Length: 435
Image (cartoon, rainbow, N blue to C red):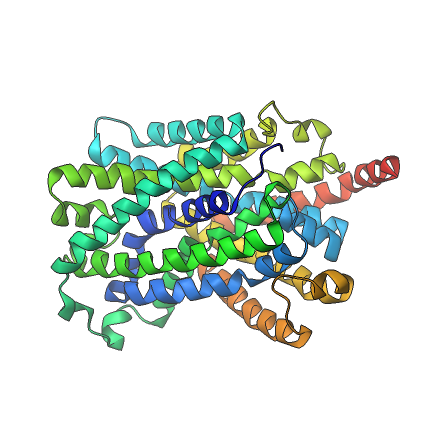
């Protein structure tokens, strides 16, 4: 690209990617299962997100590349493992539907005459068009919306904190875990999705200025910044009104209680809707990169890698638009989408962790010069801890799914496995032709 993404471009993408479906859609769900433990769940979820982001942070500071997850696994584990990872990764992007559905839910709260599913599909389509124009244009739009959403969330906190019933937030086991430890852990697992989006800026590694330093700095700073907002939003969301009024509801219920009418509209548009729009826009800016790289290498027909004048891989954008549209059109429950997406995401990211584990041995010189260099023993201990957290989070999320969803996931993964075996010969032929 002629113009590469700066640190502030990356901060815009990271913040926009983090603040979205999780805070605006999942807060009410988590209040429903953890009650007044929601603020604590937010804090622990942010810590979990920072920990599970470690493999991407280390790899991006050592070997920045487009299609980061796929590239790392291919180079550090193997070619077939890389493509299978991509196939599984595509399924995790049912989460795109939560962004569009969340946006539509807030939109119809202000304009109830519109159909929620139609609005969700329209939001998805607009985000696809913006990204087809080009990544730099997408970054400009992203930064514009991030300013408004941060202002709106700051207002939510400022107007809400004076109205919090602090006695209701008493720090006791019965108060923060009203439905038991398992539900509290599920709340943390769901909210880890709300705080873990910054890592995906690494997917655009080749298009970022000074990526070895810019990527990890943007990832860590944006996550810590958003974590502060989340903790305070959790306090307001669960502490202003009785739990029975806000459980399993979006933030408009609390917003109506703390804002005058004009500011309420501003919050819904500038905060809720822009938060979800930035996440949707940010996701589509990077989600195609791995498959684009794989297509150039022969795993898929090369037409999938073809870019338009704005540098956008049009066919792959349409593929992910389809992945996001199916749950919307079939009426899939938002909670089920989130559990499925987060649970599978943790499993796919476990493959990135294995790749990071092999990094010091396979690329010792690069690892020694890494921006986040550390002793190998320290890295291995941290990765083991992160691995346990990833597998535990995945189990908590996936254990709540229905039988038909399990069957669909298994069928899809078997298909990806078979496709990997079939396309491998095309991949090898393409590699020979490039030598």
